[in-house]
Image (spheres, one colour):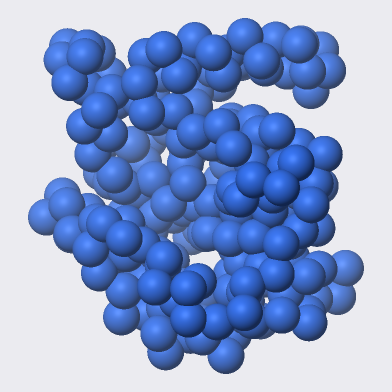
Length: 206
């Protein structure tokens, strides 16, 4: 496709809900998932969309990406910056790809989102300032933003992410046959459920 917004994979969160139940476990994004990790699988799907990809992450997680993504496509936030919330991570990714015609924000803990879903939301951005994937009428990720919203995206802070921007502009739903748009991993139980779902999908079981 000629219109190629960048995928911003946000992977700098603390994952406190996951760690609270398993205090000695590795970060949730580093947990094994399929043939990779949670984060590695999410990024691999983004790369398979053939859209430009940038990952915003922390020093501890950046080594997970060495076999999936070039170093130039990884933005590493200091721990204090990462602690500023998802908004700061989105802003960093958008600023890194300031010349893009738009951006798709995809949380790093959503490894079941399919490449075709990213392309569907990207296509919708050609005609809408904000677009998001939905499955059976339920809103999910990724959420896409057109380039006209750059000045608002690069100043985001806090844990709300881009919710206020989504609420302020007409947001276009993109219905997809991809339940992965609703599945994020917050707890060990979520991880086990996502692994079970992945095992039934050809892309993961092959």
